[in-house]
Structures are given as C-alpha cells and as structure tokens.
Length: 322
Image (cartoon, helix red, strand yellow):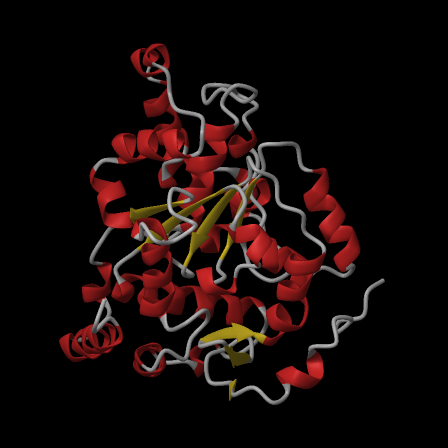
C-alpha cells in the first residue's frame, strides 16, 4: 500500500499558505489556486506519474458545483450510446450514479487507500474513457493537457457558490461535524477572496476559456467551453455540439430517431434523482446530495443583494484585462 505522501511533496506543502475556514478539507495555495492538501500530496503527483492518457480520452473539467454531475451523465451516455442505448432498461445510468460511471481523476487517486491500485483501475477502463477533474487547466499534467479532449462547463459564480455552500453543509452533517460552522456570509467572503476549493473561481474559468479560444495556444481545438445557462436553454443543441467535439457526432439517422433527445431525457435531474444508487448513503456523503436544483439564478433566493454585489465585484476585478 502506498504511503499517503510517497511523492515527497509533503515537506514542500507545509510551506504553502494554509486555509482552514472552508471545511471539510484544509486547503493550500499552490500555483495561484487553493486545493485540498490530499490532492496536492497524492492526486496531482499520481496524475502526473501514474496516469497514462490516451488520444481518445474525454476529460470533463469544471469548477466545483458547476453542474458537473449533469455533464458527466450527458457525456457518458453520449460516448457509450452504441453499447448502452439510452432506451435500454439496464443502462448504467439507471442503476449507477454519474459519479460511479465517470470517476474523478485526481480525487480517485488522492483518496484511494492504494494509489497504485486506483491508477490500475483507471488504466483498465475501456476506451474511450470519460473522466472528470476539478483541476485548473494550468495544473493539468502536461501529458494530460496535450492528449484527448477537454470539455469544460462554467456556471454563474453566485450559483456555484450557493450550490457549494449547501453541499458543504451536507458533507459536514454526514461526517458528524457542525453543519452550521460555515455561514453563507462567511462562504461569500471566502469565495470573493478566492479562498475556496479550486478557487479563485474566475481564474479557474478564464484559464480554460483562454485554452479554448487562443489561436496561439497549442491546446486549441482540444478544449470545448460550455456555459451551464446556455445548456439549460438548449440541451439538445449543446449535446450535439459536445458529441461532435468528442468525436462521436450524432448521425442524421440518429437525430431523426431522437437518440439525442432520449439521452437528454435519460440524464434529466428528475430521472437521475430517482435512481436507487443516488439515494444511498456513501462513506462520506449521500449520492443524491450531488443533486439540487437545475435552474439558473437560484442564488437570489439565498444571498442578499449585498452578497451578490460582493461576488460580482470580486469576479469583475479578477477578470479585469481579459
């Protein structure tokens, strides 16, 4: 079994800025981003040294709580629709959580009891593999960023913040910790300072956006940048765009038969919430805690206008010059 710090990074990590006010994980600032200590100690080194990307890999990237679960379901169902038709009663998404179908790269490596075994499990997945990450683009291992295709989804930062706050409270409750230990006001202040998981959010977003549009960037055409709010308005159209980018475009015959529409229906939050695997308790958090509201603008039901203004100003300042 691997040592929790078999990469030798632990001593360096102790010198990095520490943030303990956003539970449940202590965060360290590394290369401009705040990441869990375990991700830095194990996840990043293992992704760099033990993971071998393939040209047909699809990596789903996002800032936390930016509709990652929905993106996972849509991508998995689309890439594997030949072997798993969306109408099939035994479709994996009718019995498994999207997180059970699409593993997080750095998280599965960081929190595994045995990093080597976790890396072997990722290697054993059949091609084309669909994986996910919350890592910023600038921290993706070079060999990973240069291989396969990256689909990035962004969301209104205020909605991502509120969703993250609700999720954090549920995680704390399942861990037997004080769910009231992080108030929404505190979450807003930390988020606005960029001191949150994978934060600052605006820098996380802009790095992927730059990679998707810059003609001078070697990763151009390897990064598809999606907006959650646009996907809500036109899920089928965005799914077709995503399928083409992933190298598995819908044929005219498939579109005529409504395969794309069937995938959107299969992956609707209403359907996914009713899957038994999404209502079972896990070791850290119940699977259905990943599902909340499939709406845009819900932040206004929880945050005061002053809170919203604080976030808007922080994002505007952070994006100045882009």
